[in-house]
Image (cartoon, rainbow, N blue to C red):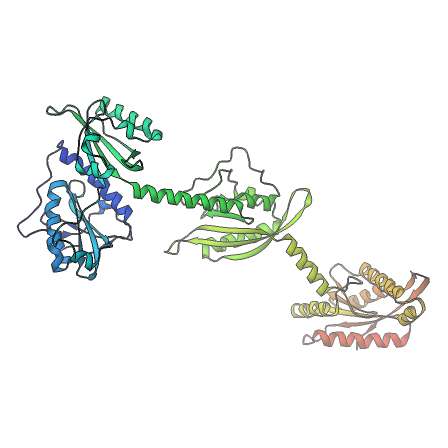
Length: 573
């Protein structure tokens, strides 16, 4: 931004105090860009023409460049605000920094703050940073047109003698800290430094005076109202200056940055406490399955105790990881060593899917803790992805669902098994048969019905009848192969599912073995009864048969066995 015949003077030669202050403006620019991560900006040459911002400025992806070349800065503003911006450009020649308010032609209804910084020494351009301000049209009408808006001091300088007493300071120093010149000149500055920072200041001061090397540190200094202001301070040794030997101190106000850092630290501390207090376990892995973070609850869930850390384990300090409690971080192998072999295979597959395909999944895993204690855990695995889609790791939450899994298994058992005999109920055994027929053509069924069971109930009572049913179920299970299933269809009727029987002979052999196991005396309350069963056998010869049709054939064969009254198995016709 300039008048057509105005250009900025060239930077002064090296070792000049003005040149030394260019380093201050460079750091101030960096602080300003951090403070306004969404700001708009443009860069100018000495004659005011816009040029592309140099790469050395290290802009964030959120900064928006208003223009790259071909125009002057004042061309971006509405006509009535250009005088204020021209005055700011003239002011820039005096102190290397200026500020004004104006409106952009692209958004004439909104007032913007424009800060100009002479960064020609560091970056070769004058940087113009633009962000919205609170001023309205009415505010502007009540102000004097063309006058630069007052700029709060963000950086300043002071001169000190070899002992640290102030020789002189600029107006920005007085504005920044709220003192009068008489309260500053002739007084030592160390007494205004926060007690926790004084050792650092003294060490830096001694190094500057003794070695003439530039020193930098971040400290808190007391303002006139008693508050503390965070500043980045740079010390330059000019004690060999013939006119006025001094140490030049440059201060940049970084209170906004520190406030943001402190707010972030507060949020991190809150997050850390929430993570540590929550009952769910949390686990974060990087793309190589290295553990970045886990909380104490995860160890307690998987191991029953938080005290299993291997010797020498160190807390994770991975950048960007959640705040940890300082407890040792275990490896994935250590954390998962209580999982069963099948659970480890499932976990490996889920992690592979999340890391390679970016797909999360919820899985229930089984763990065996110390002393054989069994535990079920629900692990919810989710990929961590950048905006580009690249998976950088996974995060998983882990819940102890042992009680709910046990209750679910109990409900499933009640829904699938007969409470008296422990055999499958009718629906469950028919479902098993249907599934078997879908996958195999070497399947058979045995239909078993107790003979004269009604007389047991009539003679000894229903309790005795229940004893008989339990005894029969146990006898049949003992005679069955481990691959077969027993179901109770109702009353005194049972169905045995035969898996993997290649021919009729083996099916009949199994039926005869089961029939023989049932035959014999059974003691009951009040006496004993002689047991015998009618048995029908059906074998899959037609692959189109349904489960109901196969059982119907076995049932018909059982009735023919009952008619023979010999307790011998009969094969379905």
